[in-house]
Length: 412
Image 1: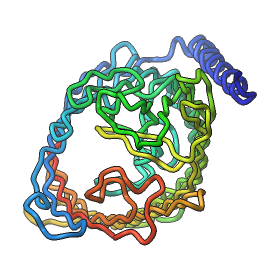
Image 2: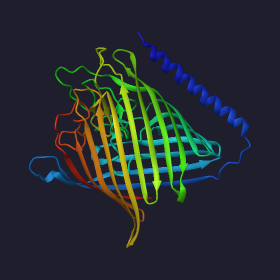
Image 3: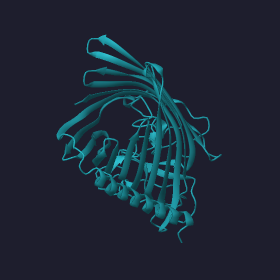
Image 4: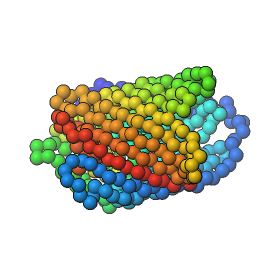
């Protein structure tokens, strides 16, 4: 039997879809004679390499120092007869996968109102990023930074405020996972982190614990509301102050049952002279069940490859400070120094918190952007020899692991 809030979710989702389409037709009628932008077609892309040295404990071995191809990608931006497209497809040789990062159609009804349809960024928290570094802030690793899903988004600007409303049917389509086709909502080969089904016989061969019950869960029917006010200061400085709300469903196919999930955030993105400050507090809760119908205190999430357990409820505190310095040193035109920190305060008293800090600099040299990062983490899923551990229960008094990472990319 469906729970009451499942019905509310469906009603609210349907109402939002009707509202968006009604708004489209009304605005289209009022502004049918508006002049279209000029047609254009821009094709670009990027090629990025990683060079890194890790210190995750134990004796040094040759695999602690590696050079890899991070990614190469293709970008297309075009507009014809007022209808635009924004598309990006990425290839990750290190992870043996490739997938769509974003891809949407867009139409401007007025200079201040746009609709997007397709794989578009979820309007939540500081946009486009809540970070300055290559690693992002910790929210990325639980699907709360630079997340992209399949759906509809309405963007409206008026005076000093920006409003974004969206409805997402499901996560973005997944690419192959280690050579196994996993298109749709279930595969881990994707750009942003989403809840995925773990049954014990998935193509990516995830092994459940001996007493662990599968979780055939996936994200469905999500609504987002984001409001930001641009507070102007003297000297051309400004503070983007806003709040975000996210509410969606978790569908368990084994039980044919829906449960709910939601997230809230307050955020600031401020420019003060050469300084930029990104501060955010976000709270999320995933009311998921396993295939036996029991509530769980962790869910499985994945992107790029292997999944990992994530605490079902937590508060994230993040702060990033950057200083931009223009220079004239050969090809180097700017150095952006930064420090980004995230604390995962897990609500379960039996779980242990996660910390992430990235100290570094972004060096701009023409079309080349190079990140020099010292990334440190405790109970972090990536900064460890045991990939994926840490965001679930974690361990008490974890080691602070460190990775020195250089990411060099040519963007065209």
